[in-house]
Picture 1 (spheres, one colour):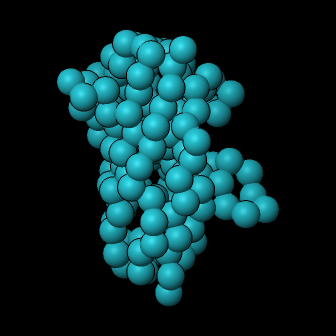
Picture 2 (cartoon, one colour; picture 1 turned 120 degrees about the horizontal axis):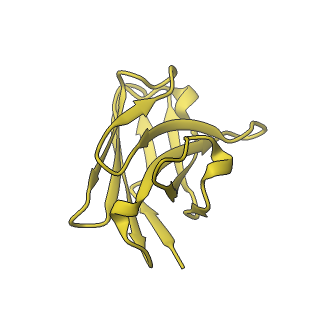
Picture 3 (spheres, helix red, strand yellow; picture 1 turned 90 degrees about the horizontal axis):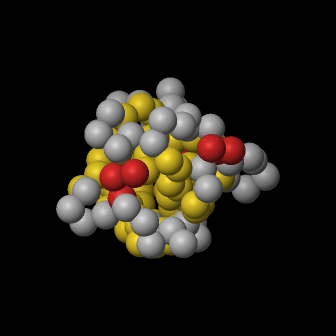
Length: 122
């Protein structure tokens, strides 16, 4: 079965940067669209950025221009480059995978990472 392992979370200051990584195993990486979601305390899970199998990406309004998703198909890895971080970005970030041609709704994703904490101080 597909497994996702995340790394790169931690503490950053406002205006700083973090880079998250997510490695997929147990499946053919190019068969999947990938995305990052996040969940802050007391809030629902929120779509952040997504990328399809060929590299086309989209981002939520709250992070557009600050966060960039990319993928390296040779390494079965998806990345989230987070720049100009704000305290409002503090959340648990989840990597997720879904088959080609599905949407970026959370219900379309069948595989999820364990989550990694990102904390941004002001």
